[in-house]
Length: 552
Image 1 (tube, rainbow, N blue to C red):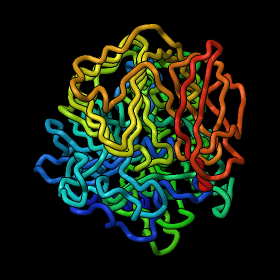
Image 2: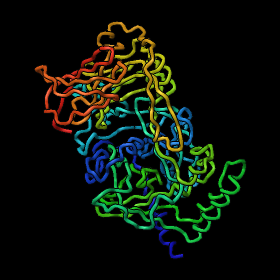
Image 3: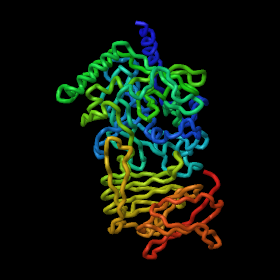
């Protein structure tokens, strides 16, 4: 029973993990936090996990609001059935963290979700004014100098449905009833349902000074997205839990799930274990508003929600994180995330994925009457969003593509704009007939689209005077990133392979090569303005302006 004081301490930790009221926002968190898009190499390779994490404004039954953090969860289903399920901390649903009654959130009204609410770099000051959330709602693309309508660029409203909550591990799984718009380009996090991805207690795989094996994207005090790193975690376990886990695993393997494959005997082990990890951060702790934030293991899989709080800026204070592996065997959670009862998924989990090829798209989506498409480099390095559909894209409500943004609508059958796409000066937009195929296997992140050029024409609808401005035509060549430093990609209506030539302003060819893919190196070219010309075997040509910079 030497473990009992630790268990009591962990229970006490969630008693202080009350989510913030929604009075705090951009710039209100303590200054020791690290922005999620930091250039610090110790956080390298985590951009997908950052995209899966969001700020959730919980609407309580009495009308008050609280700020928590959630993460979108991948499921072992075809992407058309994926839905938008998310994990968070159970105490975000209750006024009292150990309340055993019904949730205190209002399930009959819209809750609020802020995706990509972050700076594109490690500097908070680089956060676009239109993404600082001074006014609660979606920014609408008006000049921020003269407008007070400055909210969140990727703001979403939806009711929520509770799938399952458990005081064990302080865990809750919910579903957004209204899907976020496709142009949010979201990532669905993978997850680990066992302890196989967690090294022995305190084992340091990578020292803090090298690489953060465990990371936790979060929204402290309702501020822009930050990220924490840890080199190791403690996995306190009751002695008889290990035996219980072995026995029930064998039972499930031999006999399958009980009650028509709807539950697992492993769920009984959740009551025989200490249901929280203990994390000591490499740099700093966490604070209110971060409750429910996802902890990811070194393989990038979700292993539990932030529960207890540590002191953000005063030393390495231990923090409690719920063990997802302890609640995964509950029928409602297991059947939602792994409805096909795939054995390998039960044992080793599932990778994350991003939807790159829809069957059909009706835009702007998300229940929006109109939408404003902001530059993607407001929150990431690449300034390009491509929406692809196997069959059709149909625009049914006004879309405004704002200055500096680059968007592409690509579909195999038709792209119907209905005169509802406005392209502001300084924005670029491509609509083209280009099919794609989607696949789903045991590792959805391995998805690779296959593009097929089809002969159908674009169905532009009634564009009015927007046709010239939008330059909507089958003849195109787009280059990105532009400016470029080392490598560029191009997209064109011409079938490859392509003979490519890069011209200097005086007309001399500085690079020439035959390419079978739309990726080419520009390394070694001096900074300046160039022109890229491509041609195919039939002699058709396309030309685009290319800017080379000396900075990445």
